[in-house]
Length: 357
Image 1 (tube, rainbow, N blue to C red):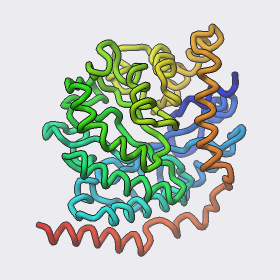
Image 2 (cartoon, rainbow, N blue to C red; image 1 turned 30 degrees about the vertical axis):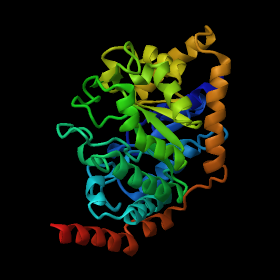
Image 3 (spheres, rainbow, N blue to C red; image 1 turned 30 degrees about the horizontal axis):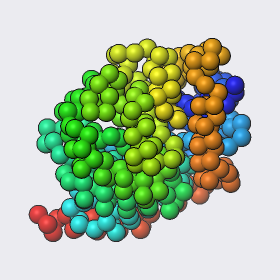
Image 4 (cartoon, helix red, strand yellow; image 1 turned 180 degrees about the horizontal axis):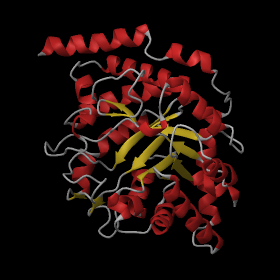
């Protein structure tokens, strides 16, 4: 089944595609590419890279994803407007300003052909010792986070940038970093409903297009499996939070998962549990996982009906956002990055935060 590749997002090695990357993405009909700092030199180069990736598409264009949160999580550091952390944005006490920040970010990303921002962070910074989330969060209480999350989603999606609410069911109360180990959440399901879930409920109501499942062990959800591999976690998101769109995993190369399962095993488990898309920061790993799932599909270890349901959600999203895709015209790209409007907005935020000191 050639469409199986649509369930995968892969990283690439540099600022231009290699022959091997071209072959894998085109022949296996891979659904998307995630970009990092090593894939970026300038806005014009980025747009050229995206054009070359999209030239490989089979039907709908690929998801071109990035983690572009602001603060310390921004992959394209030069030329793009570098907004402060979300915790600093909240200090302005203005959801309208938060909308404007994501409106500008959305325009800059769209100018280069990025169509999926793996943001906003919906986690609540309710553990002061949590370094991995910290100032990436919008606040330490569900009400504030919910208010600003909604503004962020609208700002991005107004500019045809799909937003992704992360990291469900909530990474804010942990101490361990899932990049290096498996964090454990000891809260009861009612405690999660009364706090952690609230910003995700708001994100769903704000029509966010994707939700990211976190690599967390939450005993009140599943005592055996981390959420990424847990049917219970996906069912909770589908049934209780009424989220009917695309669910993506966090990077499957993170040690919280990779230290415990092989790449192929984890990919199959995540897809069978309820993930629509599995994500990998490097292509070698994505290949290993993909070919393993492809073999499992032949052996009927993942059902055709299940795959078809995932593809229906993915295709619906691509049809909505990407059906009228045209390659980026390179001479126009730099005119839309770091505009006067963006610089004025950045000055306003800095000024407001200075006034509060």
